Each structure stands twice: as structure tokens, then as C-alpha cells.
Length: 153
Image (cartoon, rainbow, N blue to C red; front, side, top):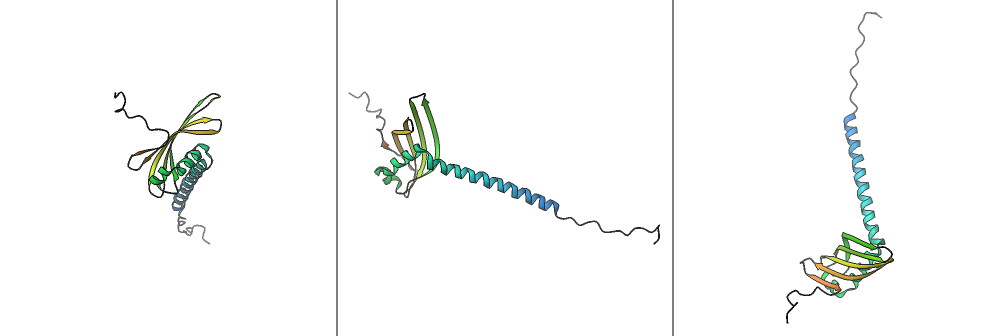
């Protein structure tokens, strides 16, 4: 061999799709994180409905009410908890307001419930179902007085 001969040139190494696999790996990781967050949110959402005694009390009352069955139909379910407000007085219980989006076989509506809470028991003070057309149906409690009828002697 000639010591002054040029070394044999080898072609440069071919790329191994480093960028493609890196981007694909990052995309898969992002999808896994999004699916995990969505799955945990869905699990938490349905767990609340299964264990919250206040929501169960309200929904049992709605399902047993004939007027609610006429408006919403059968198989009434909670679609969304819009608002939960709790006001507790120390040692005496408290009050809660729930606004739930519900649906049955005939359509959707919104239920607003005002509750008195003593210990773990909840008593419904008022329960108003608003149908999809905006009409209010008072399932528990009396409707507010008509302002046109006040002071009319």
C-alpha cells in the first residue's frame, strides 16, 4: 500500500429519519397527555353525579314529578352542573344553590334548586324547571307573587 495514496472515500451516512421520529414522538406524547386529562375529567364528572347527595336528592325529586315528566319526558339525566353555591353557617348547617342542565326523552331544560342543609341531609326549599322555550315550572315551592296584583285594593 502506498502511504501517500488518498484514503478511500465513503459516502456520508444516510439520515435515519431523526426529525420525523422526534416530531412523531412529541405528537404521540401530546395526544397521550390530552387523552389522560380528558379521561380524568370525565371520570371525575361522573363520579360527582354518583356520589353527591344533593344532586341525587334534586334529581330524584325531578324524576318523580309529573310536571317534569310532561316537559322533559322519561329517563331524565344530568348533562352539566352549571353552578354550585354553598353557604355554611358554623354549627347550624347551611344553604346551597344548584343549577343543573338536564335532558329527557322529550327535550332539555335547566333545573335550579335552593336547598337547606342540616348535617348530611338536604331539604329542597324551591325547585324550578326552565324548559327549552324559557317557561318556568315550579316543581317545589310557590312561584313569586305577581307584582301587578300587589297593592291592588
